[in-house]
Length: 314
Image (cartoon, rainbow, N blue to C red):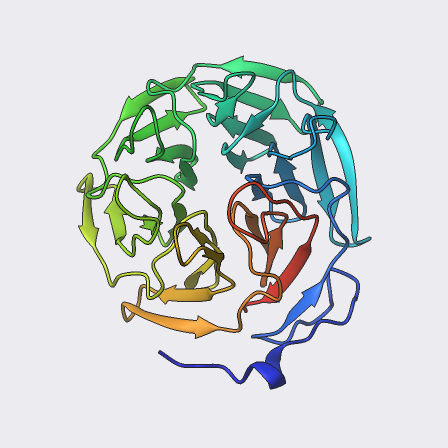
């Protein structure tokens, strides 16, 4: 893999978060999230960033507020409040609707099947048809205007792949992933879905990577994630999908700052400059050529941060 000269490419000066022209391969700092959390979910509608859910050590921490980030003003603002805390959920925007999918809900931190839809135009929240399989620590991606919910945990790691159609408010079952896993990352590019890394009952360091062909309704293996890890996030920019962060427990317990980009055109991985703040349980979403990496735990387990770091990936 190509290695970038970090000293030349790491730019950390605070700047307006929607710079007129970003320099590919550089990082910068944006406004921090108002409340430090971990195990959050992030999504973008192409013009703004949204963040939901999470965990914190302090029971008094606000985990109900949904936040919106405006890149033109470099500001976060709360815009809605959940009825119940959730963590390890999925988040996605289709047209003007923000969807919160599954996760673990209190007070027992049980796997959830809930699908909540927030209308960004009217400010109304509605319950939609629940997922057939309640689960948390799943990955969610959009393909052809539909939500794809991948993997996660019920009482074990699963390879479950379920699709939600907003037009009919119905779920359907699709081909499961080849590798059951949770705390994975997923993304879509050129009409296909990709799933990366994660963990199962044996390891936190899965490097398995797969691609889903919706026409064939089948998954196939692709080049493995160079740095196997879990608690990760991913976003697509241009012709690549970039995978960020992660953690591993045990004797070698640590978090990862790795940023690794997969190019489907040649089936290869490239190592990008690592995140300035290594962490897991982070939210990842792209606006234009920039990928925003928000919140997450700087150490393994239940640690929190309010960090917003931005990679120019275009």
